[in-house]
Structures are given as structure tokens and as C-alpha cells.
Length: 227
Image 1 (tube, rainbow, N blue to C red):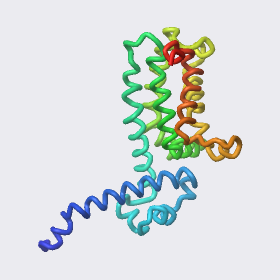
Image 2 (image 1 turned 30 degrees about the horizontal axis):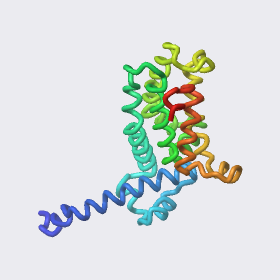
Image 3 (image 1 turned 90 degrees about the vertical axis):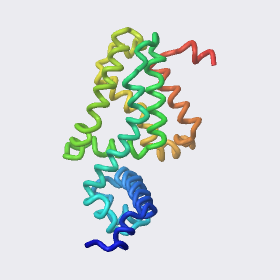
Image 4 (image 1 turned 180 degrees about the vertical axis):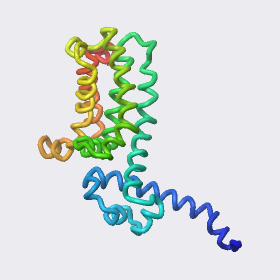
């Protein structure tokens, strides 16, 4: 029979809150470590050290390094879907212009990647090799977003609402051009800072990057020019 003391400790809300907080911190640190060092280079010892926890808490909370990696990826994609998904699903079908439909999607994606550059770095690292982790990410997360993005872009393309240079592009190329244009600046932020002395994480720089991509993919907007 379980002792009352053991039951009290197990059900202690403060301890549960601490566990949840520690778990979230470990996931956040793990994502950064995997993005910076790669899966093989990010040891559980390194992750635990950066999170300021005992290494034994990784198997306690996640079971294995692979499970930790998957949950960290699940978590960042959940953030992306929370911000980007509703805009993508709606794409404002009642709107009459590409700006009203696509501009919010581009701005939301730029702001997300600027805030979470480790997302772009991890995706670049895993996407360049044909392995089980890449296949897992694509099948679980990327494919649904790709299909939804394709649908939104193709709809406005068929309606002739995209700039002429973009209208004739295969949606596959349009998708990768957009993803590359959004992520490259933040993926290579250290290079940009060294090259130009400007920080891509600066809020004004983020918004300027969003403005540039909107101009390229959407074209001039009387409403924006009037501001």
C-alpha cells in the first residue's frame, strides 16, 4: 500500500509545475542545440548542461534522445501552426486582391522565423540528407503545410492575382523560392551581421524583410503605398 506521504508528494501541484517548467526549458534548449550542432553533435550531456539540469532528467522526461528530438520538433511546428495555420486555412477567400490573401501569410511566416531562427537551421540541416528524421518531419509536419500552401498559392495564381513574373511558375518552385526567401536571412544571421553590420533580429529589419518579400510576391499595393 502506498503511504500517505508518497501520495502527497506525487500529487504536489508545486512539484508538477516545476516538472512542467523544467520539461519546457529542456525542449527549448534541445531545439537550439539540435539546430546548432546537428542531431549527432548535440549530446544529451550538452543539452542537460545548457538547460541547467541533471542529465538523468532527459530519460526521465523523454525516454531517449530520439524522443526528445521528436518532441522538440513537434513543439516548434505546433507554434508555427498556431500562428500560420489559421491564416493559411482561411487565406481570406472573400478578399479581392492578393495582398489581402497572401500578405498576412508572408508577414506571419517572416516574423515566426525571425523569432525562431533555430527552426530554419534545424530544417536546413535535416532536409539536406535522406534519412529517417527527414522523412519523419516531412510526413508528419511539412507535407500538410506544403499542400495547404500550394492550394493557397495556386488559387491566387489561377485568378491572375500574382505579379506577372510569378504567375507562370510551377507552384513547387514558387513554394521553395518563398521558403528560401523567408528563411535565408535569419538562417545566416551571423554572416549578415558580419557582412553588413546589421542584425536580422532587429524588429525594424524583420519588418523591412517582410515588406521586401510582399513586394516581390504580391506586387505594389495602393493601400501600402498610401501609408
